[in-house]
Image (cartoon, rainbow, N blue to C red):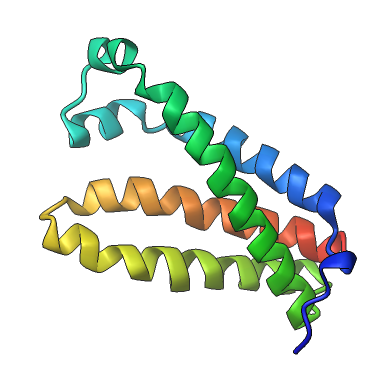
Length: 139
């Protein structure tokens, strides 16, 4: 296998980052899981506003998103995924097989609830599935 960074669709990587951040904003908003996530972490709205950690969190999220989307683009390229179903399966493989599977022991050892696990890992599974389709189509 040869990884050709010159053939990576960097526009798709950028769009993947935007999608990741957009889905994250919706996922952790009051429309979807903000209240449940806050309850699982024992956060109040006041704590989140006062902390100032949100800026640091967004900065780390953007950098991590770039790394994740670049890795997914390389996997799409390396596997030759070019159909929507191929991208979906590759995205699910990354989301379930890498993110959810690696996080399961952490949540278990940390005595976190299945709800907390599902909120946090579900976000990544959904994003990888969506972006996997997009990247496969945009090869």
